Image 1 (cartoon, helix red, strand yellow):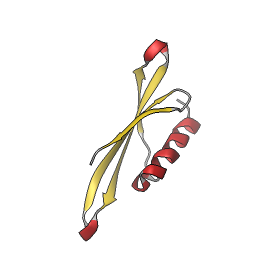
Image 2: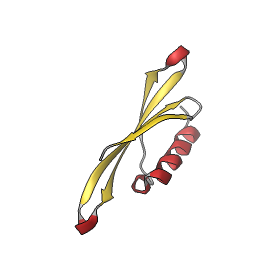
Image 3: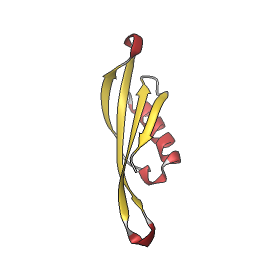
Image 4: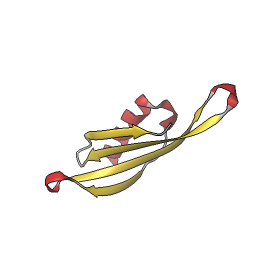
Length: 76
């Protein structure tokens, strides 16, 4: 997966989860259907909670080689 595709996916994630703005994901290649490559991108960040507390948040994104997001999930 090239750098431009990673940046495009990161922008999409930061729109949904503003606390992930500027976070660099770890990327792993996975086997996809019909021989198409799929990638797992894991974003790790912290979100602020009321009362000054913070919470670790992990966003997992599965995308194909062209950058189309197949699935996105987050921790609480």
